[in-house]
Structures are given as structure tokens and as C-alpha cells.
Image (tube, rainbow, N blue to C red; front, side, top):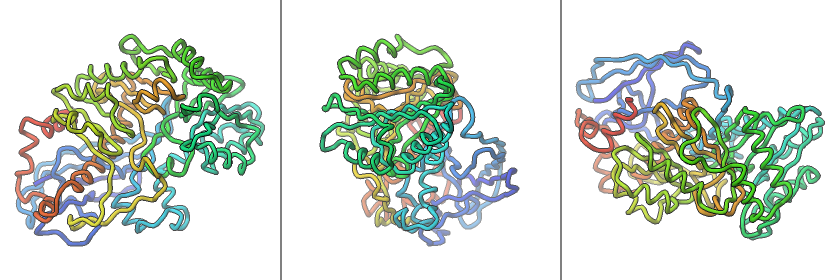
Length: 507
């Protein structure tokens, strides 16, 4: 009837059965929003994740097959798996994802759907940040004294604590210079950026990026220099706003590699001259050419925009088409035609796509049943019974759920490929905007981190997407409950996506 999962936390000397939300109908306690023990309501899936695990801990998981009937469950076969979770701040690549699910059962239960500002002691802000804000501020605070310098290129730049951190770095003696988007258009963050800069009293540290008024300076990177040499770079999808740090999903990706940081510093120096796009294209293509096929093994390369053609986007589509076992893609603003053409081709492996909202060509890209989609959403006043109504924080006006821009290709294989950064997979991000992407090959640890975060959000939004599509009659018929026999297993052993998922994640 499913699997019960017991966790031994050797670091904190705790042992308990983990909890979930789905219940058997006949033993449903009937308490909305209250997690239930998997010992009484087991997991009926072959893919499951523990997103309450903490970094730098040692755990043993005992997974127990549960048999019998819902009112008389019996423990049977079991396996144990021991895990040492990593220090997420260590290594060449340190990766920080925010919570990205303000509308969730956890937030409704913990904070009663209040605005984060209404929750005492910044508890909601800390929970939503999930370490992203802290890591960003710690990164900037490394620039403490005259030996250090910071070079930043930023799009939306008006979250006060980050501006104040730059100011403090400058006051410590560090050399701080910031290029920010200042296009004089209605949808530009220009005015908000300038107002925040003035309020933080850091105007002398900044330079507006004003050329190319039809395009945007969409970068979000910061280079750290020590003794005049670039040492690290912070990049990713996170704008410097409360909505980016605490609202829709985002990632901050820190690379401790002087060679990569040097590339970003060279790019920043070009941006600091406020060049026209026509001139910058020549430089970005010469300095960061698209690899002819695959980049070298175990390497981190950079791809900067704007570019004179769609060569980079075409290369991403080619890599996606050449995948051998799985693809994972986030698409905040819909799926580009080049990527859609790949998704329209039938493949014998799974391709997971996480969308902020439905793409206009969903019918075309859904024809291959191995393409699995999850779309941003929340639970309102539904008839699913045990679910609390959810509410967004209101921090994000346009992109409400998914803001990351990354593609994972064959992440569980011997040669994973990750493409991640500030650029949406779009024509404009490739040809017009200031953008940066990292292309990371062969880094299994980094691929694991991104894959874990992808599936956390995919499962979260997939459930809501299905629930929001279901009509009331289906919801009332008990589709929200566990199956009272072993019929739930059938799809996992029948040709189709569930079987492919079981086999892929089982290795």
C-alpha cells in the first residue's frame, strides 16, 4: 500500500517517521493542513524527496513496505540508506535557492497566510529566503578593507539591505563600482533603482547603463577582487528586490574560480563604458564563442549577450535535442520556438518543464507524453478537503512563481550538463539584452543540487496544476486520497511516463 519512511538524524540524535499530506479516506483524521505520519498514510510513489533535511548532517532513512489494509497496516520488507548532506556553502560552486513557494501549505500553516511584514522577528522573511539573502549579503561583506573590490552589473537594484551592504563595503575601504539598468522606459526599473541608490547614499559608486533604450541591462552578477585580482563571481537569476529574494523562485550561484571571475570582470569593464549593443555584440562573440559541440569535460564556461545571431540559443536547443536520458528546463516567460521544435519531437526519455504559466503552444509540445509539465499556481478554496487555502505574498506583480533560467541535461549520468544564469531562453535575451550564462559540464555535485531543487518545485506545482484543472466531481470522488489497495503501483510497471520516471531515478 506504499512506503513508510523513518529518519534517523545522527547529528541531532532524533528518530521519527516522516510525514506527508495524502491520506486513506477511511482513516483520514479530517484536520485541514495537518501533515500525517507515513507510518499510517504511506507514500504511494517511487519518487519522493525529503526537503526538511539540513546541510552538514548525517541521516539514515529506513524505507518500509506497508501491506495489509488502511485500518490494519503491517510493516514488511525494508531498506536503509545512509546519507551525509553537504555543506552548501563549500566548494568551487556554492548554490543557493530561495524557498520559491510562498503560496504553500507550509506557509499557510506556519504564518497563516499573513504578509511577511506582519510576522514577528522576520521569521517569514527568513523562511522564504531559505539562505539566499544571507548568502548574498555574506558574499558582499567579504569585501572588507582596501585589499578588496566589487564590480557589479545589476538589473533591478532596490532591496535596501543589499545596497547598504555595498555602502558598508565602500566605507571599509573596498573599491566598489556598480553598473545598473537605467533605460528611460515605462517598464524599466530605472526610477526605482535611482531612488533606492539615492536613499542608500551610494550614487558615487554607480553608473547608469543608458545606451540601447529598446533593450535591457538584465545581468545580476557581482565580481569579488582581492589584491587587484578577480577571485569569485556571484551570478544567477536573482534581482536585488524583495520579490526576487523572498517571492518567486530564484537561484544565487557563487563560483570560486579566478578564471571564470576574470571573464566576468572583462565583461563588466565593457558594460561600464555603456556601449551600444552593436559594439558589445562584437566583443561578447569574440570573447565567449559558442562551443562547436560540447565544452571540455569538467569545465565551466561563460556565454555573454547581446550577440549578433541566435547561435547560443540554437546551441542550447541542440544540446537539449542530443540528450540521452533526461532534460529538465525552467521557462519563466514561455518556451522559445527553437526549444519547442525540440520538444515536439518524440523521445524515449522524460523531459520535465517547469513554467510560470501555460505556454501558448501547450497542445503541440504535449503530444509527446514523455514531456511532463508543471505550471505555477496555488490552492484556493478547493474541494480537496484536507488542503488549506493558499495565498501569495504579493511581492511579485508579473512573474509570480518561476523566475529561474536553467536547463539540466542528463544530470544523473556520467557527464551532466547545466546551463544557468540571467538569460531567459529567448531571442531577446540572446540578441539584445545584457545577459550572462554559465555552461557547466561534468560537475555531478552541482547537477545534483539543481536537480533536487527542480524536482522540489516541480512536484509542488504539478500537484496544484492537476488540482486546479480537476472539476468538482473529480475532486469529490476521492482523487485526493490514497488508494486502499496496491492498484497505485500499476502505472509504475506499465509502459509510460511513470515507469520511465521510476527507472530513471532508480538509475
